[in-house]
Every structure is written in structure tokens, then in C-alpha cells.
Image (cartoon, one colour):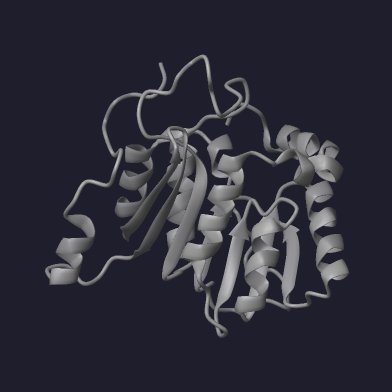
Length: 234
């Protein structure tokens, strides 16, 4: 992480009021839509949204889920998410402080004691270093969800240095291969890769089936699109 959690929190709190209007790129909208589509919670499912921001993903999933828990480091963003939920009359959502590596899931009486069924994150994990991403994915796996959907800035190849989809001074995106390795090492099987842009994508990871089954071989046997070992950055 190139800035401290406190610095990131202050930055996003400052921009909370205008954040939704600023996220108007075609790639961002496509990524968010794919995260919602692949999350596909059922009426009995609890969803955990990490890096929830102003609640775009959480509020889109709430009508389909039993409950959605949103976690973010920015109180300004969380307050905006609560305002949007209240304005829309959505009552099965809860927004509170939490980080990727300490999501504070279950810290409220309104959340059930068991882990979430689905975990989602959109355009947030790229602030972490590769080692921090790996730690975060291990924490997410430890919560026991059946599915993790990650939409984010990620490199499918060598990024064009003249047209970055991220801010190099604060962001630290990973290659798709790095993320896939972290997911599989944590016990997930990659079930979908959506390439939105050379630097934006959605990964869908589900609990790996029992080793040795045909489903297991099919899920992990092939190289996902763009999964290469080429270094994306110096």
C-alpha cells in the first residue's frame, strides 16, 4: 500500500459527495455490472461487500439477498452509502468500518454469526500491494464464502504507460496471474475471467471441489485468459 489506511480514508471521505458522478467511465460501469451479475446471491444468502464505497454494489445486490454487509475505511463514503440506502428504502443492508485484512464481519448484532455466502469487491483491492492482496484473499477465504467476485484494476498484459487506467502514485494493481495464484492458493477455483479492458477485469472464484473429481480438473486445468507471468511493472 503506497499510502496509509488513514490517508486513503481521508482522501475518499473528501471525495464522497462527488464520487458516484466521477465513476462514469464505460469500463467502470461494465465492471460493476459484471460483479453484480456474477455475485448472483439467492434470497437466503448474506453478501459481504469489501471496499463498499458509496454502496453501489451493495445496494444493487440487496433486493436479491437476505442481507448485505458493506465494509469500507472511509466514514464519508459509508455515510453516503447509508444515505442512499435510506432514500431507496433498502433496509437489509448494513454499512460499517472494515478493511480487507480486518473486515470486522460479525462485529454487529445485526449480522449473523456464520460467515458470508458471497464476498464481492469492486475497484478497491488495487490499493494493496501484492503481498497485502494475498493476505486479504486468505482472510476472505477464512470467512468461508462459497464465492468471491473481484472486479478491479488488473493487468492482462503489459500496461500502456501512456494510458494507465490507474494512478501510479497511489495504486498498485496486480497481474491477473498474481491474483489467480493467490485465489487458488487460498482454496478457490477460478470459474470465470471477464476482461473488460487491458487493465480492468472481473475474476470469479468459488470453493474448489474435492480434489480428483472431473469438476475439479475442469475448473483448474486451463489457463484463464490473460493469465501470464509477464511482469506488469518494474
